[in-house]
Image (cartoon, rainbow, N blue to C red; front, side, top):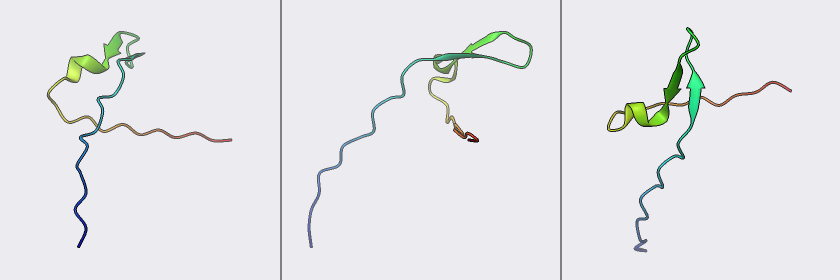
Length: 43
């Protein structure tokens, strides 16, 4: 059996993107809530 140290994850960097109406939405607007981000691309 091996014991490993737990390193908590680092917070995501602050960023802002427009919503569907063009208004900016910051990641910090959701502080304290669960946020699920999907990153995808087509090449």
